Length: 404
Image 1 (cartoon, rainbow, N blue to C red):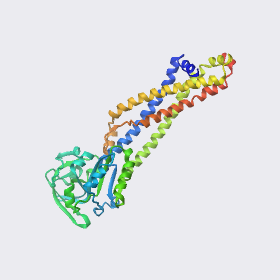
Image 2 (spheres, rainbow, N blue to C red):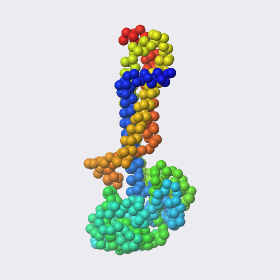
Image 3 (tube, helix red, strand yellow):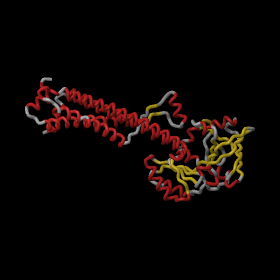
Image 4 (spheres, rainbow, N blue to C red):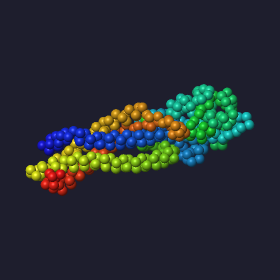
């Protein structure tokens, strides 16, 4: 009886009910879209950054990250790499040999990072081939190097010229070679664009006398949420003889930036919740006060206050669920559309994104937990406003109410 009475009361005044439900609907819609854009941007930034070079997890030699020495390189044969690649949620494993060396052309000499890569595997992860601005991409042939555009400009070198590499190899062995420039690549980050040289892994191992050794194995995952489980599996597989590092450890600046932005975003979300609470409360208060005479008549003819309170509370519950569910459904449609059609960023803000190696777009998350959490919060805020009708009816004087 109470449920039927409450539902019928709502639709006695359709305009009033639709206004109240619309306030809850808009609250859910705004909260979900705001949080989806924020969380989605973080996920996209992390994905782009790790794909840009580091991977989600790296297998390294003990002590390598601190001094970046070839003496801390490791041997991971194809069987071991294959076992890691077979782990659930691992999408690719990328072996690299990284070293620092003098790079010369003519009378100009610079220090550069020399990176030995498997051309196909590296391109699958970092899309290095797309950064090619001149020449051709690396092949399995041992000859040829890719030079970052900034470094090529500093050395005044172009495609077809030969670079001289001179440095220190494994356990102090002299590493020297003269290699032709097969292509020039451009990076958005200046420190990479001014100091990167790529060659095939086999060629790098020969030049630096490391045979089958590598300095790191970058591992890509299908989703950052699977990182913990994959990390544990790899840790049990490789044991203590190698060091495992996550992207958080390799890119602390990105972690701090996301944490700072997330804190400010949560503050904005709290402010939004406060605005939502006042908006919904104002609507419920309007609905209650305009029915003062009605409540006075009902109490005068013998209806118990607790039953009237129960009916009005159920009305608020119906309104809350009506607005929250409809808001969640529409929000899901909106964020799903923008998930597959991200909003492009233009102007100076776009340049800042590109400098970080990230496409300038607003990316939206479609995580179901995000949608449910925001709908529940707004629902609880709406249900809390049911306290106003409770105290209003409890303290209502029937005679005064009937006289307005």
